[in-house]
Each structure stands twice: as C-alpha cells, then as structure tokens.
Length: 529
Image (cartoon, rainbow, N blue to C red):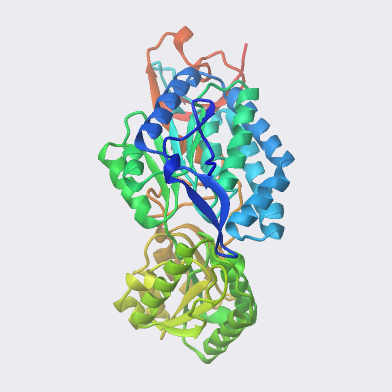
C-alpha cells in the first residue's frame, strides 16, 4: 500500500504516520477511493512548526511584492491544472462539475488569490499610522506561522492549501501549515503540489508552505496552543472548533473560527401576500442548492400565520418533494443530518416533506421541510436551532407580528439574517422593529434575496456573533479585511528613521497613511521626494 507523503520543510517526505493511513470516500457511491493518506503524529506537527517559524523569521521584513508573486504564480498554475483539480474534487465530494466546481468555485478561488496578491502589493491593509508630534508610528505586521483547517463543503474556495484563509495569511506575510480535510485529501494534495512548485519558482523559503492530511484531536489541540504558532484559521463543526478555541484561548493564541449558522429568513405579512410564489421558488432553490451544504444555507424561516402563509408552505413542500435529491458530502454529514432532523421533530416540529435517508448507494437524504409554532420554538429555542446541515429547513409560524418579534430575541448569532418585505411599504413599520432586534445578531443583513451568495468584494462580511464565528469583528471573506486577522499591531516609539519599516518612513512611495495634524487624525498621501 502506497501512502502519499507530507510536505514539510520544503520537501515531500514519508510520514511517520503512514501505518495509520486513511482513504477518501466517494460520496456518490459510498466506496473508498484507492489513494492513501497518513495521520501525522505530534512530532511531525512540531517539525512543521519549527520550519514555519524559521521561514517567518526570514520573510518578516520582506515587501508585499514577494508574497504577491507567489500568489500570482500559484493562481496561474491552478488555472493550468483546472481539469485535474475539478475531476478530483468531483470524485471526492460528489459536487457537480458544472456549474459548481468548474464554473463557480474554481474561478472564485483563483480570484481570491489574485485579490490577495493585489492587497499584498498595495500594503494599505497594514494601516500604517504616523503621529509626527510625538514620533510614534504603528502598523499591522505578520503574526507568524498560521495553521489553516479547511472545511468539507468547499474543496476549492476554502481549501486549507488554496482558499480564503490561506490567501489572506500568505498575503499578510505568514507561513502556512495546511491541515487537509479528510473528505478531500486528494484535492488538497493537488493544490499543495502546485503551491510548492510556485513557492520554489518564486524563491520562498523552505517551510513557508507545508501540508499534513490528518491528525488526531489531541494533537490538533497541541497544535492550537503551541508557542511557535502565530494564529489559526478554522472552518468546520462547532464541536471541534470550540475545542480548538478552548486550547488557543488558554494561551492567548488568536483563532478565527467559522462554526455554525442557520441564517434566519423573515417573511413579513406583506411579502407573503404579494410575493408568495416568488419566495417559494427562491427559497427552495437556495435551500436545496448544493444539497444545502452551504454555511449560508437558509435553515430557518420565520413568518406570520395566514391562509396565504399556509398556501405558500404547501407550495414549498411540493417543490421540495419534486426536486432531485443531491449527494451529501460524507457518511458523517448524512448521520448528523438524520440526528438533527430527529431533534427538531422530537421538540415539536412537524414534517411537511421528507425526513428520511434515501436507500441505495452513496449518501443521500430526502429534501426535508419542517414546521413549528412560535410558542414551541420559544419553549425549546436552543434545540430547535440545531443546525441541520444539508437539504433541510425549519419554518417557524407566529400567530402575530409581536410573536414574530419575540422569536427574534431567542436567536443565536448567525452569519446572515434576511428580511423579505412588501414593496408598497406596508411592512415598513414592522421591518424597523425587526431590524432593531435582528441587526446585533447577524454579520450580514440582507433584504429580499436569499443568503447563499457570498460576493468576494472588500465590503463583504462573512462573519458574525458566536456561534457563527469565534469573533464578531473579523470576516473570512473580503480583502483586505480578511488579511488583518493574521497580523499583530506593531508600534515604533522614537525609533530612528533609518530603522523604521518602509511604510512608516516619512519619505516613502505614495501610500495612504493616517497622520496626526493639528491634534486630529486624518488621511494623507505621503509622496516620495
């Protein structure tokens, strides 16, 4: 049995954990794929950290151009090897080649890398600040080696060896240790081979990018609190993420988590009356897209009882029943979805459609729609917010607008919150009352469209209050903001001009800085002379 090597210190080497090898599973068939990948022991993880720390020391004062060249070279190689990447990801995840992997997710991944390269060159993400009156200057600087844990549901855009956290950490000047997700190790291997080649071509130091495929939970905890580690980027389950957070918090280690979100969608009475059919179509499409395996999937709908509401729910149930059943990412996703639906039913939710696994090869679950009263939701609000990750959603029906507002008070933190309201203004008063309660609970407030699209633009916030993420200030999508997670604030007090970083020197190429002028901070362009 041949086991793929790990990338440590600039070299592909046989893993000490080769005897504990694992296989990826094709979720469409339930069959193991032939290639084997190792479980890295703690000693191997510590070796990665030593090489990463050495690389961090080498690149600490490098200009952003060096990191940008690496990111651009990597992006070009991904485009050149797109066919192989798409084929591998399709085999490991069951996600459709087109339009998902080839036409949407891979171009997004390349775009993220190039946006990160642009940010690295520009350097304004580091927010250089100069107070000339007291000769104190500061800027954000690289934090050190970053461990990136990728999720199961985005084999490209959030891959630990190519996705958003990877791009942000690299652009900010940090070495990356990528921990592959066990659902798609082959995809991560292909990315890692291309990243390694790009690193060699652009003369990055050994240890600037490294990859392991798996480790046990105890060793993952040791990684999270290791003194050589700078920060962690994690996307995945709430259970594993909170374990890592506990370890990291105990030693003051920054950890940026994307954990769990059911993304409430409110449909106000005027919207039901005017746009019920359009809403049913949009909601069914959003909830079932990608078999519901998106972090922004609309897993909770809140509306007010009426004859039109019942008609709308019947329409949605018919659409769920008629739609094809997609493939779930793994056996564990299927198992957890079944458990989550059972939890909802056991605490008052009634099935309107689906509710059972689909017989046959591979991992599939019926498209599932549930309904519960607002009173029951309030009574069991914690358990009825159990994330049913997959093609399932729960509708909460309130008896009145006041009861709908009361439901909002019991919502956990989410990535998104959406409100559909009437076009004629009849819902405006209720909307304002709702927004006052909803706005503090979500990272992104949306009107009249589904939350599943996440634009990769500077103004995007893909974050939110716990348990959506571990920190409500930072975003996992949107450059340059995403870079700042992997930085530390460095201050220079009366440091001699020749010893200052380039961005903090008075005679510096044009760059937007913050300066203290007449006792007030203001932005000013500093022009080279």
